[in-house]
Image 1: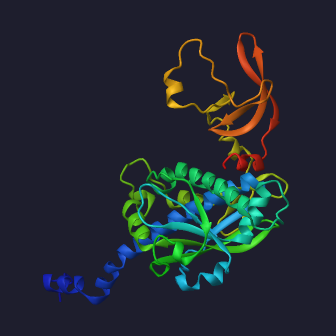
Image 2: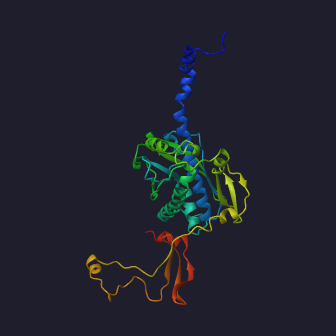
Image 3: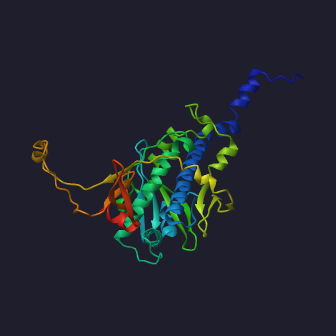
Length: 339
């Protein structure tokens, strides 16, 4: 008997039930791989940023593979929760993080230089909004390398979590539980909430693996992909170390963070501001005087990337202006400046 298959035998194999069901599952497998990479990258950036801001080791780990029915979200986050809605210009549909208000209060209070025991209030909404705006900015920067496509994030919107306040019905959304750990302060869970439209949109634009990226600039092997699942954070002594998404610490040199030292940021000095009617602006001419909202001798603001980080007094160095730093702006003052 010949060992060579006939065309009829080949056709029979290609149309077999086992092979057919396997090929039909490939798109679903690709979609799952995309979501795993997206949420792993986002939560990794969240852990890194929160660790840096609070100077406390923080992990946010998505429980990949354990998608929960939307009706069971109350068992994850309880009855008092906040919804942090993340907007991505290139992606349709709803995506957000649902967190217990008690956890938001702890993180926000620590950010405002408290001890993490304050009750949840409106100031915490502002604080967590600013914090996660930093998270989405970091995620936006990392998206090209980690996901193979550049994403553009908008401001994070914080509201009370209510089913009737969602953009899409809750029963049309999917839920992935997230383990939240803030060392010594929080051991809790949150939830990633996303709609079917979001799933379809994100899976249609992000390659299932970085090797499949069409721009030819990203092509990481499995070892490098594994490295992307690690986040950098602080330990209790203030030293940097690397932590895997499973929570196991890996000691690495501080020089890894020092790689960022050469990154340039826009620094500007603001003497003051004024609000003028259009007519007054059109009437401006050489010799016109514009009165600012700052008293003579009052410290001026030093802004980094349009965020006030310090106050100082104007000095003259040789023939150039400069400022002498007199105080650093606390996170609480930064929050108040957003109102």
